[in-house]
Length: 337
Image: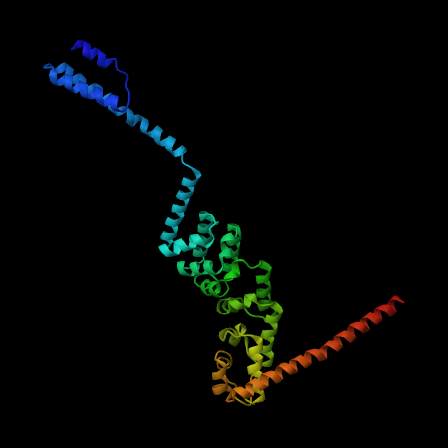
């Protein structure tokens, strides 16, 4: 017994099977012995060897952490982004489709862009629709998104109003800043709308952001001077969203029929003018039947005549402009002589 015990004590503390063998042998020695001394030793010594792997576990975990590949870290980032999108209220289907809109987009870039849109007061569904319509949003630098978001807040287009703007004009984030400034400047300085009215126009008629500033100004002037429509009515009836060709055709047709008259300085007319919604917001068939009380054939003939008149008018202006420029050149030559 002493020789066996001495052999066991000299064994080095190996891991794995050797430790379990040593512990088993000590238990057998304890059972064979009738004294308590060996039992105490058998209970104390094996515990030392059994606890050694627990001391080495943190080191092993650290090594495993360092051995993770970039692919593993990428998967971890993707999982975090997916979890964040789900917390925002996106469904599983929306999350999968958002991640596949532009496969090369980094997941964190996607999350940053979506976060900015959510902070503007948009719900997950409008954000998803906007990104599907305009995937270029995912390529924008996050600082550009923050600046554009701040600009839209100054125009009071946050808190739900941006939903319609993004639906009709999703490129509002990718447009050049000077183009948006030009449209806003025309509405404020040329058309003399108030700040609140400009906000309402951009909210109700986001398509004006795509228009040429000069054409937008002409459309307002036609409404104000030719039709006698006031600022409040321009905003309330969404007048600026309708094409100028459609507006001129229907308005002039009613004028020639004697059913529309430009108000005087006091805003009075000799005939009751129809409401703007009955002129512009209805289909052509309804306009002819209820507002103009005319036939489609007559309206088609009129549109051709009106187009010919406008063409002749534009041609008649060109020679005048050319002669003026020639006269200016001749005057310049005389001054040089």
